[in-house]
Length: 309
Image 1 (cartoon, one colour):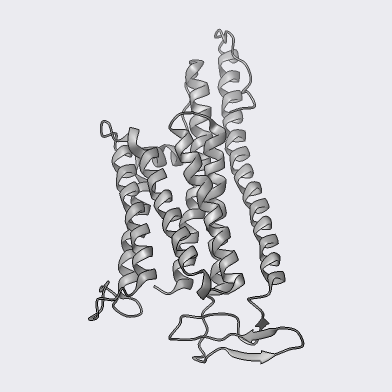
Image 2 (cartoon, rainbow, N blue to C red):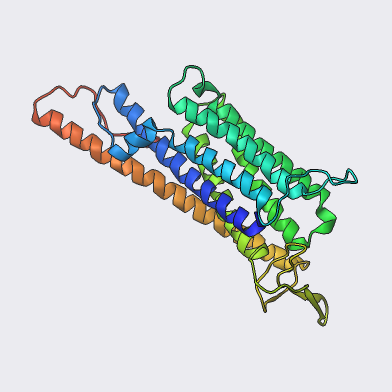
Protein backbone atom coordinates (compact mmCIF):
# COMPACT_ATOMS: atom_id res chain seq x y z
CA UNK A 1 0.00 0.00 0.00
CA UNK A 2 1.31 3.43 -0.89
CA UNK A 3 1.92 5.83 2.03
CA UNK A 4 -0.86 8.17 0.89
CA UNK A 5 -3.54 5.46 0.82
CA UNK A 6 -2.24 3.99 4.08
CA UNK A 7 -2.50 7.32 5.94
CA UNK A 8 -5.93 8.13 4.51
CA UNK A 9 -7.47 4.75 5.32
CA UNK A 10 -6.03 4.66 8.85
CA UNK A 11 -7.12 8.27 9.39
CA UNK A 12 -10.72 7.42 8.50
CA UNK A 13 -10.76 4.49 10.93
CA UNK A 14 -9.29 6.47 13.82
CA UNK A 15 -11.70 9.38 13.29
CA UNK A 16 -14.65 6.99 13.27
CA UNK A 17 -13.37 5.26 16.40
CA UNK A 18 -12.99 8.55 18.26
CA UNK A 19 -16.54 9.65 17.40
CA UNK A 20 -18.03 6.21 18.09
CA UNK A 21 -16.31 5.92 21.48
CA UNK A 22 -17.50 9.34 22.71
CA UNK A 23 -21.09 8.67 21.61
CA UNK A 24 -21.01 5.24 23.24
CA UNK A 25 -19.53 6.61 26.46
CA UNK A 26 -22.09 9.42 26.67
CA UNK A 27 -24.93 6.97 26.08
CA UNK A 28 -23.68 4.46 28.66
CA UNK A 29 -23.17 7.19 31.28
CA UNK A 30 -26.73 8.48 30.78
CA UNK A 31 -28.16 4.95 30.84
CA UNK A 32 -26.38 4.22 34.12
CA UNK A 33 -27.85 7.40 35.58
CA UNK A 34 -31.37 6.25 34.65
CA UNK A 35 -30.85 2.71 35.89
CA UNK A 36 -29.72 3.94 39.31
CA UNK A 37 -33.01 5.83 39.66
CA UNK A 38 -35.27 3.08 38.41
CA UNK A 39 -36.33 4.87 35.23
CA UNK A 40 -37.25 2.65 32.29
CA UNK A 41 -35.54 4.13 29.25
CA UNK A 42 -35.73 2.62 25.80
CA UNK A 43 -32.67 3.87 23.90
CA UNK A 44 -32.80 4.73 20.19
CA UNK A 45 -32.80 1.76 17.84
CA UNK A 46 -29.49 2.73 16.27
CA UNK A 47 -27.81 2.84 19.67
CA UNK A 48 -29.30 -0.52 20.66
CA UNK A 49 -28.02 -2.01 17.41
CA UNK A 50 -24.50 -0.75 18.03
CA UNK A 51 -24.55 -2.16 21.55
CA UNK A 52 -25.80 -5.61 20.51
CA UNK A 53 -23.76 -6.15 17.36
CA UNK A 54 -19.95 -6.35 17.34
CA UNK A 55 -19.74 -3.38 14.98
CA UNK A 56 -16.51 -1.93 16.31
CA UNK A 57 -14.73 -5.29 16.45
CA UNK A 58 -15.84 -6.36 12.97
CA UNK A 59 -14.81 -3.04 11.42
CA UNK A 60 -11.34 -3.25 13.00
CA UNK A 61 -10.91 -6.88 11.93
CA UNK A 62 -11.91 -6.19 8.33
CA UNK A 63 -9.74 -3.08 8.09
CA UNK A 64 -6.63 -4.72 9.55
CA UNK A 65 -6.94 -7.81 7.35
CA UNK A 66 -7.46 -5.73 4.20
CA UNK A 67 -4.65 -3.34 5.14
CA UNK A 68 -2.26 -6.21 5.92
CA UNK A 69 -2.88 -7.92 2.56
CA UNK A 70 -2.80 -4.66 0.61
CA UNK A 71 0.43 -3.63 2.30
CA UNK A 72 2.09 -6.83 1.12
CA UNK A 73 0.81 -7.07 -2.46
CA UNK A 74 0.34 -3.49 -3.71
CA UNK A 75 1.91 -2.15 -5.88
CA UNK A 76 4.17 -5.22 -5.88
CA UNK A 77 4.64 -8.36 -3.79
CA UNK A 78 6.63 -7.79 -0.60
CA UNK A 79 6.12 -10.98 1.38
CA UNK A 80 9.87 -11.52 1.82
CA UNK A 81 11.43 -10.05 4.94
CA UNK A 82 15.01 -10.93 3.93
CA UNK A 83 16.66 -10.98 0.52
CA UNK A 84 19.18 -13.46 -0.87
CA UNK A 85 21.99 -11.74 1.05
CA UNK A 86 20.11 -12.08 4.37
CA UNK A 87 19.51 -8.35 4.46
CA UNK A 88 16.30 -6.99 5.92
CA UNK A 89 14.03 -5.55 3.22
CA UNK A 90 10.57 -3.94 3.17
CA UNK A 91 11.06 -2.64 6.70
CA UNK A 92 8.27 -0.03 6.57
CA UNK A 93 5.77 -2.51 5.19
CA UNK A 94 6.49 -5.08 7.89
CA UNK A 95 6.37 -2.41 10.58
CA UNK A 96 2.91 -1.39 9.41
CA UNK A 97 1.81 -5.03 9.26
CA UNK A 98 2.94 -5.57 12.84
CA UNK A 99 0.74 -2.66 13.91
CA UNK A 100 -2.16 -4.14 11.95
CA UNK A 101 -1.74 -7.48 13.73
CA UNK A 102 -1.82 -5.75 17.13
CA UNK A 103 -5.08 -4.02 16.24
CA UNK A 104 -6.41 -7.26 14.76
CA UNK A 105 -6.00 -8.92 18.18
CA UNK A 106 -7.86 -6.02 19.79
CA UNK A 107 -10.63 -6.26 17.18
CA UNK A 108 -11.11 -9.98 17.83
CA UNK A 109 -11.22 -9.39 21.58
CA UNK A 110 -13.73 -6.57 21.16
CA UNK A 111 -15.95 -8.66 18.88
CA UNK A 112 -15.96 -11.57 21.32
CA UNK A 113 -16.69 -9.26 24.25
CA UNK A 114 -19.66 -7.70 22.46
CA UNK A 115 -21.18 -11.18 22.11
CA UNK A 116 -21.03 -11.46 25.91
CA UNK A 117 -18.55 -14.30 26.05
CA UNK A 118 -17.70 -14.77 29.71
CA UNK A 119 -14.46 -13.22 30.88
CA UNK A 120 -13.48 -11.52 27.61
CA UNK A 121 -14.84 -8.05 28.38
CA UNK A 122 -12.35 -7.68 31.23
CA UNK A 123 -9.45 -7.80 28.74
CA UNK A 124 -10.80 -5.28 26.20
CA UNK A 125 -9.06 -2.21 27.76
CA UNK A 126 -5.86 -4.25 28.10
CA UNK A 127 -5.77 -5.25 24.43
CA UNK A 128 -6.75 -1.75 23.30
CA UNK A 129 -3.87 -0.30 25.31
CA UNK A 130 -1.62 -3.06 23.97
CA UNK A 131 -2.45 -2.22 20.33
CA UNK A 132 -1.76 1.50 20.72
CA UNK A 133 1.39 0.77 22.75
CA UNK A 134 2.74 -1.40 19.93
CA UNK A 135 1.99 1.39 17.46
CA UNK A 136 3.73 4.01 19.61
CA UNK A 137 6.74 1.79 20.28
CA UNK A 138 7.38 0.94 16.63
CA UNK A 139 6.80 4.51 15.44
CA UNK A 140 9.23 5.90 18.01
CA UNK A 141 12.06 3.52 17.13
CA UNK A 142 11.45 3.95 13.40
CA UNK A 143 11.61 7.70 13.85
CA UNK A 144 14.81 7.60 15.91
CA UNK A 145 16.60 5.13 13.63
CA UNK A 146 15.76 7.04 10.45
CA UNK A 147 16.29 10.55 11.79
CA UNK A 148 19.29 11.20 9.54
CA UNK A 149 17.39 10.07 6.44
CA UNK A 150 14.42 12.39 7.01
CA UNK A 151 13.99 16.05 6.29
CA UNK A 152 13.33 18.43 9.17
CA UNK A 153 9.64 18.71 8.23
CA UNK A 154 9.19 14.96 7.78
CA UNK A 155 10.71 14.31 11.21
CA UNK A 156 8.50 16.95 12.87
CA UNK A 157 5.28 15.61 11.35
CA UNK A 158 6.04 12.04 12.41
CA UNK A 159 7.06 13.20 15.89
CA UNK A 160 3.71 14.95 16.27
CA UNK A 161 2.04 11.75 15.08
CA UNK A 162 3.71 9.87 17.92
CA UNK A 163 2.43 12.50 20.36
CA UNK A 164 -1.14 11.67 19.32
CA UNK A 165 -0.66 7.98 20.14
CA UNK A 166 1.04 8.29 23.54
CA UNK A 167 -2.01 9.83 25.34
CA UNK A 168 -4.17 6.91 24.19
CA UNK A 169 -1.69 4.49 25.75
CA UNK A 170 -1.51 6.43 29.02
CA UNK A 171 -5.28 6.83 29.35
CA UNK A 172 -5.74 3.16 28.49
CA UNK A 173 -3.42 2.21 31.35
CA UNK A 174 -5.17 4.53 33.81
CA UNK A 175 -8.61 3.24 32.83
CA UNK A 176 -7.63 -0.09 34.34
CA UNK A 177 -7.52 1.52 37.81
CA UNK A 178 -9.86 4.53 37.59
CA UNK A 179 -13.33 4.47 36.08
CA UNK A 180 -13.33 8.15 35.19
CA UNK A 181 -15.34 9.45 32.18
CA UNK A 182 -12.70 12.14 31.69
CA UNK A 183 -10.11 9.48 30.80
CA UNK A 184 -12.45 8.02 28.18
CA UNK A 185 -13.04 11.44 26.65
CA UNK A 186 -9.31 12.13 26.55
CA UNK A 187 -8.82 8.81 24.75
CA UNK A 188 -11.55 9.74 22.26
CA UNK A 189 -9.93 13.13 21.67
CA UNK A 190 -6.46 11.66 21.10
CA UNK A 191 -7.79 8.97 18.76
CA UNK A 192 -9.75 11.46 16.69
CA UNK A 193 -6.72 13.79 16.64
CA UNK A 194 -4.55 10.95 15.34
CA UNK A 195 -7.01 10.39 12.51
CA UNK A 196 -7.07 14.03 11.44
CA UNK A 197 -3.28 14.27 11.69
CA UNK A 198 -2.85 11.24 9.44
CA UNK A 199 -4.91 13.12 6.85
CA UNK A 200 -2.55 16.08 7.22
CA UNK A 201 0.53 13.88 6.82
CA UNK A 202 -0.93 12.20 3.74
CA UNK A 203 -1.56 15.46 1.90
CA UNK A 204 1.63 17.13 3.11
CA UNK A 205 4.22 14.39 2.59
CA UNK A 206 2.70 11.70 0.39
CA UNK A 207 0.30 13.32 -2.05
CA UNK A 208 0.55 11.13 -5.19
CA UNK A 209 1.44 12.58 -8.55
CA UNK A 210 1.71 11.08 -11.99
CA UNK A 211 5.06 12.50 -13.04
CA UNK A 212 7.95 10.09 -12.52
CA UNK A 213 10.81 12.52 -11.97
CA UNK A 214 13.56 13.04 -9.45
CA UNK A 215 13.34 16.06 -7.14
CA UNK A 216 14.65 19.23 -8.77
CA UNK A 217 17.02 21.24 -6.58
CA UNK A 218 17.49 24.96 -7.15
CA UNK A 219 19.61 27.43 -5.21
CA UNK A 220 18.10 30.57 -3.66
CA UNK A 221 19.72 33.39 -1.76
CA UNK A 222 20.10 31.69 1.63
CA UNK A 223 18.85 28.13 1.41
CA UNK A 224 18.07 25.32 -0.97
CA UNK A 225 14.54 24.95 -2.32
CA UNK A 226 13.50 21.50 -3.45
CA UNK A 227 10.70 21.24 -5.99
CA UNK A 228 9.27 17.79 -5.39
CA UNK A 229 7.48 15.60 -7.85
CA UNK A 230 6.80 11.89 -7.73
CA UNK A 231 9.81 9.64 -7.32
CA UNK A 232 8.81 6.07 -8.17
CA UNK A 233 11.85 4.45 -6.56
CA UNK A 234 11.80 6.33 -3.24
CA UNK A 235 8.04 6.87 -2.84
CA UNK A 236 8.61 10.60 -2.54
CA UNK A 237 5.51 12.74 -3.02
CA UNK A 238 4.49 16.35 -2.90
CA UNK A 239 2.45 18.94 -4.74
CA UNK A 240 3.65 19.59 -8.32
CA UNK A 241 4.97 23.03 -9.10
CA UNK A 242 5.16 24.05 -5.42
CA UNK A 243 8.54 24.84 -3.94
CA UNK A 244 9.04 24.06 -0.28
CA UNK A 245 12.14 23.84 1.86
CA UNK A 246 11.51 20.79 4.02
CA UNK A 247 14.70 21.41 5.99
CA UNK A 248 13.69 24.94 6.94
CA UNK A 249 12.80 25.08 10.68
CA UNK A 250 10.27 27.81 9.92
CA UNK A 251 8.27 25.41 7.77
CA UNK A 252 8.31 22.79 10.54
CA UNK A 253 7.16 25.40 13.07
CA UNK A 254 4.29 26.33 10.77
CA UNK A 255 3.07 22.73 10.73
CA UNK A 256 3.44 22.64 14.52
CA UNK A 257 0.90 25.46 14.54
CA UNK A 258 -1.26 23.44 12.14
CA UNK A 259 -1.10 20.61 14.67
CA UNK A 260 -2.48 22.99 17.30
CA UNK A 261 -5.36 23.78 14.91
CA UNK A 262 -6.03 20.04 14.64
CA UNK A 263 -6.16 19.85 18.44
CA UNK A 264 -8.68 22.69 18.57
CA UNK A 265 -10.88 21.12 15.90
CA UNK A 266 -10.70 17.73 17.62
CA UNK A 267 -11.76 19.22 20.96
CA UNK A 268 -14.71 20.96 19.27
CA UNK A 269 -15.83 17.79 17.48
CA UNK A 270 -15.56 15.53 20.56
CA UNK A 271 -17.30 18.11 22.76
CA UNK A 272 -20.08 18.55 20.21
CA UNK A 273 -20.66 14.79 19.97
CA UNK A 274 -20.78 14.46 23.75
CA UNK A 275 -23.11 17.46 24.10
CA UNK A 276 -25.38 16.15 21.36
CA UNK A 277 -25.74 12.72 22.99
CA UNK A 278 -26.27 14.30 26.41
CA UNK A 279 -28.97 16.57 24.96
CA UNK A 280 -30.74 13.51 23.60
CA UNK A 281 -30.54 11.90 27.04
CA UNK A 282 -31.94 15.01 28.74
CA UNK A 283 -34.88 15.11 26.30
CA UNK A 284 -35.68 11.44 26.96
CA UNK A 285 -35.33 11.94 30.71
CA UNK A 286 -37.75 14.86 30.71
CA UNK A 287 -40.23 12.93 28.58
CA UNK A 288 -40.16 9.93 30.94
CA UNK A 289 -40.44 12.22 33.95
CA UNK A 290 -43.39 14.05 32.40
CA UNK A 291 -45.15 10.73 31.72
CA UNK A 292 -44.70 9.68 35.35
CA UNK A 293 -46.08 12.99 36.62
CA UNK A 294 -49.04 12.79 34.21
CA UNK A 295 -49.91 9.28 35.43
CA UNK A 296 -49.64 10.42 39.04
CA UNK A 297 -46.73 8.12 39.81
CA UNK A 298 -44.38 8.84 42.67
CA UNK A 299 -41.20 10.34 41.26
CA UNK A 300 -39.41 10.21 44.62
CA UNK A 301 -36.04 11.91 44.66
CA UNK A 302 -35.69 12.21 40.88
CA UNK A 303 -33.47 15.12 39.99
CA UNK A 304 -32.02 16.63 36.81
CA UNK A 305 -29.08 14.97 35.15
CA UNK A 306 -25.84 16.14 36.79
CA UNK A 307 -23.22 17.94 34.78
CA UNK A 308 -20.77 15.05 34.95
CA UNK A 309 -23.04 12.79 32.86
